[in-house]
Image 1 (tube, rainbow, N blue to C red):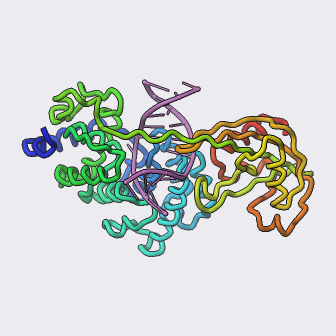
Image 2: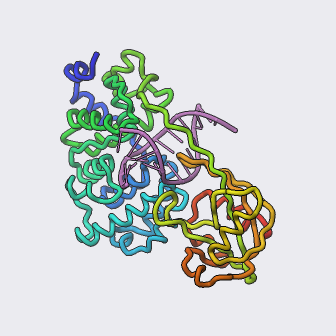
Image 3: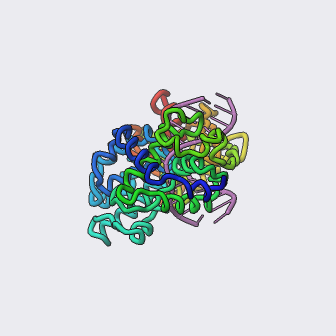
Length: 365
DNA sequence: CAAGCGTGGAG
DNA sequence: TCTCCAAGCTT
């Protein structure tokens, strides 16, 4: 049967009631479900993008202690926000959220806009997050189609479109507009996602205890394991890197800030470059070009770190900073000499936390 | 539209 | 060790 034929004889209000009853009974007690503060819903939705609930919970709780309100976050330093995000990944989320919250503080007096136009133009708020905030916080019947919702609905209506394609999301949004509960869009959307997280899971879904199993075409046909259809993404590419932990005469450590755009933007790291020679010349030249004279050791460690699209294999060196040869050049760099105990104050990506752990915390350097 | 953008956990 | 993710957005 086609999706249209299924929908025509499908029991919409029965599905709504079964889903809402199950959600009311089985929903998890999560920190962002204690009230409907739009700011908290917003922050939680940004953190939950491509990130599991169990990972988010401690970050969310710390974030709310540091920045309890729109005003508090708007007034915070960006580096403080990035430090609170350290380890959570996709750091543009933190920078975009910070910018958007400043705009809300400036343009809306700190009140999160409760309409589609206002909310969608905020940095980092795309179609899913806009719908999630509108429905969950303001109970407005807007679709909030994430991976869970596409998986659940692809099974219920046996939809074989590739959910990795952007255009497919629109199809699911139009379906949600048809079936969303007009009285309780907040719990309806959350119920769909909760069902995807707890019952209608990617692998071996629990169809036997599914509260909406009688509405599901995939279960009827026994094809739930074939859905959803999702194109495979290309595997990450290997990149050989070098990093060096440098100490000066006073025991200070040299760190550098990454560029404002691109991967790990504005985070800090130990001087880091793509490997271009087997010996030490590439490192020495890289540092000399920034005005630094150094004495390097042989490789002391190796770090492997997998990103979503790249794998870094980092050869780690240590060395001594002999002097700043060209202080004018050094002044233009994003390098800083900091006390060993202060390295932890800066936001580091996990790849370089691994270096920090090995060289500065476990090692005797 | 496809690619770029992180991380830690499950199987 | 390897594969596949998990409440996506921006360019």
